[in-house]
Image 1 (cartoon, rainbow, N blue to C red):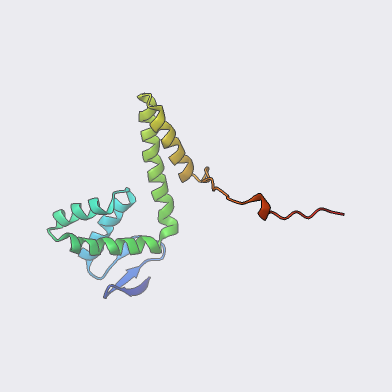
Image 2 (tube, rainbow, N blue to C red):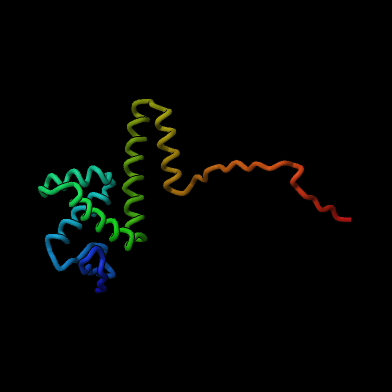
Length: 141
């Protein structure tokens, strides 16, 4: 287990476990709860609103827990990124299925495009502007 001082208190991390351990069990529990909702793909505002009400604290105070959860995700990004990507793919695939059932082809095509981007099957086109006079040709003699 490694420790590091972040935001004025000691944080401990297990190398094999992305979840947070903290000397204060209540703090660790709150950060872990936020991590679960971040992994589900909830927005920052929605998470902070939910937990500030649930825990009876200001949004600013709840944001501090959210910030610590984000720091932990950044630390464990390689492991968490694949989970988050899979969650988003499942959501978009469900939207695609609904659109195909409702024959909403325009939204279905957008969903397919998003799936391809998340799966790294699509590369954005880049426009290259160049004047032909700028090109240099070397002809073999």
